[in-house]
Amino acid sequence: MLRLLVRVYPGDRWLLVVALALLGAGWALGLAWVPPDRYQGEAQRLMYVHVPAAWSALALFVLATVAAARHLWRRTPGSDRLSRAAIETGLVFGALTLALGMVWGRPVWGVWWAWDPRLTSTAILLVLFAGVLGLRRAIEDPARRAVVSAAATLLAAVDLPIVHQSVVWWQSLHQRPTLLRLGAPTIATSMLIVLLLNTLAMSLLAGWLVMRRVRIARLEATIDDRLLRERLARARPLSPPAPVRLREGSRGV
Amino acid sequence: MLGGAVRAVLLVAEKDLRSELRARSFLQAALFFALCAVLVFSFALGPDRPQLATVAPGLLWVAASFAAVFALGRSFAAERDGDTLDFLLGLPVAREALFLGKLLANLAGVLMLTVLSLVLMFLLYGLPAPADGGRLVAAVVLGSLGLSAAGTFYGALSVRLSVREAFLPMLVLPLVIPLVIAASRATAVALSGGQAGAPWTGLLVVFDGVLVAGATALFRYLVEG
Image (tube, rainbow over the protein chains, first blue to last red):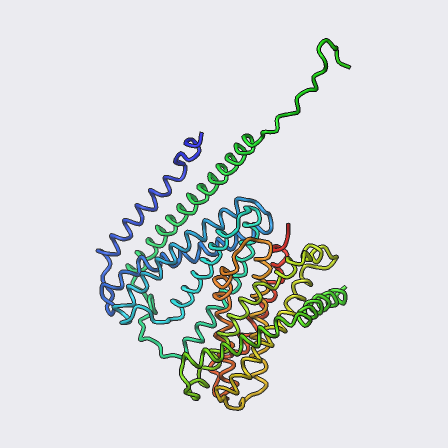
């Protein structure tokens, strides 16, 4: 029965196939077809992964926040699972964004980490949502965990614009790195096409991962439920009281 | 209606402050923490007074935010230990009023700690007389308010759960990063009288507004059930 439950869900497979095909095409075009940037050279090609990953992470955190708000409003278990799945996937894409940003920053800026406002606020964003995920792990009761972590998610989300503004002002006190802004101020049409294609592919992949994560969470809940019920069934040593036996021969009352 | 809510806020705050004053535990702990923090910073950085004076605003808010995280993480624990939490929640008072009352009492504690640290820094680090007293008061009060809001929220979050308190800094400190930035800058500007570079006091006001409103609105979800 359990094997039947965790059987691979076939319904979303087409989404993965499309996402991977587009991603393959996008990467091939980004590596081979588009010319390298005039100033940044080959390092600029990282943009075709970095920007889609950043966009996906941002979209996932917005999704997680909306799902958390919905959970506080409607209390459906599905919205809690969606919020959790979006945060987990968003952290993966966010970490990818930061890692790629650092790899790009080393040749272009000359340093791994420049305390650039966007970099800094992305790092704070990740720490905030990683905290929410850690909080989930610390709470046993599922219903309570869902409500409390939804509240924490919302508070983290309203904090984010302030984090960004504070970091922008904070950083402006220091010397700016001589940065060549990505996509500034115009971008060649071929670059834009490849960037959009990669963004679409990465978004589809993110969507597939979230769907898969939600499904796994749903199965986990089912299994927990089933295990609990089985344990309850086994832990019933109190058999119903035996009927009072009256003396032999007696016909009862 | 509104008058009743305000009265409830003040009553909750008064209750907390009175029990703090009777126990005197917080006052002593705050004084001791402030003294230790100020001393430890000077040992770590060397006895160079001008240098200490330069970094004092940052140190002040580092000390205040860590103290707030650890002290306020327990701000609802006394209610739980005294079995008064359910009574408090059972009162015919809006949850928002309960939270604001707690926040007010905690603000008094954090404010005391911040002021004590600042006074000690004036004495031991040789800080100059503040160039802009009004701005310094605003920075201290607004910074303490934001820290209290975040700390009280997570104190309420942890009280009914088996969340380890060592875990709270991971949640609170990233949240108050903008506050630490803005309060440190505002304090530095108030002390030196230089150019602000950015409207830090305004940022503190926005942070406090958003965090107090958000935490007050979300508090009901933390203690339900």
